[in-house]
Image 1 (cartoon, protein in one colour):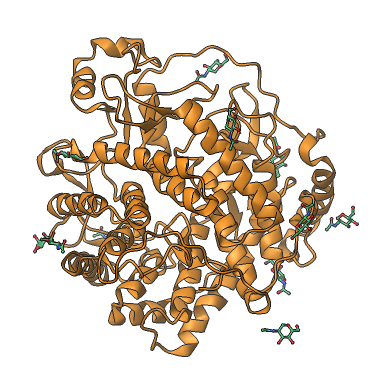
Image 2: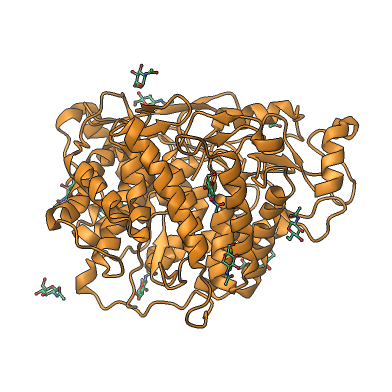
Length: 598
Ligand SMILES: *[C@@H]1O[C@H](CO)[C@@H](O)[C@H](O)[C@H]1NC(C)=O
Ligand SMILES: *[C@@H]1O[C@H](CO)[C@@H](O)[C@H](O)[C@H]1NC(C)=O
Ligand SMILES: *[C@@H]1O[C@H](CO)[C@@H](O)[C@H](O)[C@H]1NC(C)=O
Ligand SMILES: *[C@@H]1O[C@H](CO)[C@@H](O)[C@H](O)[C@H]1NC(C)=O
Ligand SMILES: *[C@@H]1O[C@H](CO)[C@@H](O)[C@H](O)[C@H]1NC(C)=O
Ligand SMILES: *[C@@H]1O[C@H](CO)[C@@H](O)[C@H](O)[C@H]1NC(C)=O
Ligand SMILES: *[C@@H]1O[C@H](CO)[C@@H](O)[C@H](O)[C@H]1NC(C)=O
Ligand SMILES: *[C@@H]1O[C@H](CO)[C@@H](O)[C@H](O)[C@H]1NC(C)=O
Ligand SMILES: *[C@@H]1O[C@H](CO)[C@@H](O)[C@H](O)[C@H]1NC(C)=O
Ligand SMILES: *[C@@H]1O[C@H](CO)[C@@H](O)[C@H](O)[C@H]1NC(C)=O
Ligand SMILES: *[C@@H]1O[C@H](CO)[C@@H](O)[C@H](O)[C@H]1NC(C)=O
């Protein structure tokens, strides 16, 4: 999951009056006419191949025969459809819960009730719209009008075995025309993680034999055929000079539509944020496996190679900045970390290796290991006076520590824990536990029991907040930090159905078997039920540190169904439900089958 509040995020930074930091050597991104040293030959191949169709005949462009990401690396082995390879045995990732332990049926039933309650509100006031507006009792088409609540939410309903809900959703999904929208250019990233991920996951779950699946066979098959139809439109995003996906696609002309970014050097680039460009691997690899069409995989490997061979080099190995140039392929700033706009890029590197280990994904896992290593050495920090508490700082555009963390970065605890088990590096489990505990601190120190969007802390030795040393005279922040180890950044007290902390507690629960993680999630759910629930469904909460959250906001995001309630439910379901050795989650919490033999 990434930047749900990118503007707010930026305004927070200015609220903190972040000062100019020591200048870095000037950024030298790879520009037009230049080549990326790591990928020079490929790069020019892609330039020639892709630039021609874009310029000449965009509307009739065919993607068949599009360059394979193949040449972007030393030796890509062609992926083979599942049925025709000998799969390795599934890894044992989870704690060995004694049979009948690790779940709690009472709590699971309460989460199911919450899902059904919110779903009923959607059906009553917003049927067929993308999302429900729980205060104005209306629907809104903010994600192209394809009913994102249903496509994003169906796999959770399948896992909960809410049969009537699934049946309604399947009927809807079969009828959607994913090739057209009245709502302008289509954002490739969110449509991939929410819609494509939702379709593929629902298909995998129903085909797995692990869940009730007595639904119409043609509607189950439609999940995959619709995924293919949607992906074949999104594929045009990749027809940029670098092969890295443009931020948007125009579905009426089948052309990429670029976003722009002005780098710290003042130059404007066609650009994409790193999380957007780097969160396609799971969805497209899975689609390649299920359809046998290797082009889906080649398309995403090409851009991924640029992200994992960044030019210029990031401040610390693995910690790439938030923006890349989709024309030249270069990195445009040094704002690395696990936060918004980078987050799911790093997240997918280890997950795709878990999905399928091969020559290419090994490179991704290595890059992930660089990032975690740099995190241990530079980003993981203890705040002043709280030596047992750990937060993961971000870097600013110039590569300097921000002493801040956003809730999005709270997925990192679970990601470190997964990597610990997948790679067999025990120290990463310690890092994961520390990060998951740090995020818990931001929840259970608020009035509501819900966590804020963004917080900061004081340096463990100097007891200053280096980005803005005048924070010392801000009694509110100082007082909060003295009590809790962190202070909530002004203006970022909102709770908007963020799933990332619960996600990490769930990994911690499944991997360590320690019941305290389930208790944390339950406390959080009670706070949510108390403050976010209203007479229609659930809403967002404006201030986590005021009684009853102060007031509610008029949104029920599709990830409330897809992510928050899925991780909550799985926390109390029998631990064999979605075993982490057999399933890998995309960043929107959609599990697909790992390429292994259970
Ligand atoms: C980064 O460095 C540049 C050049 O020294 C400076 O103008 C800019 O303000 C700095 N950015 C941040 C976020 O500190
Ligand atoms: C494979 O997928 C690509 C990308 O959408 C598409 O252009 C191509 O026609 C597909 N190939 C086959 C054989 O279906
Ligand atoms: C990949 O590289 C080989 C050898 O350089 C070349 O023959 C082939 O045409 C390239 N393939 C693509 C799709 O660019
Ligand atoms: C790719 O993997 C195969 C084994 O699967 C190995 O023999 C080969 O050397 C690898 N190639 C490269 C370039 O790493
Ligand atoms: C594997 O592929 C071959 C030829 O393409 C086919 O005859 C065979 O049935 C396939 N095996 C499986 C298990 O699908
Ligand atoms: C299950 O959850 C309920 C509600 O929180 C709690 O009262 C009960 O003790 C839990 N049961 C077990 C076995 O942990
Ligand atoms: C409800 O939403 C629709 C679509 O967004 C809009 O056209 C309509 O004006 C809204 N109705 C009310 C009462 O706000
Ligand atoms: C951005 O992309 C457009 C084509 O989509 C191209 O005409 C333009 O030159 C590009 N600009 C830069 C700065 O790369
Ligand atoms: C992590 O960094 C340290 C210090 O640079 C180095 O010794 C170690 O080998 C690195 N570990 C990995 C896994 O890269
Ligand atoms: C917060 O959680 C910790 C365990 O991490 C617990 O010891 C503490 O009592 C909790 N505080 C509150 C206010 O619930
Ligand atoms: C959630 O809130 C509803 C409405 O107030 C209540 O009926 C239900 O019992 C609550 N769930 C839990 C687990 O407290």
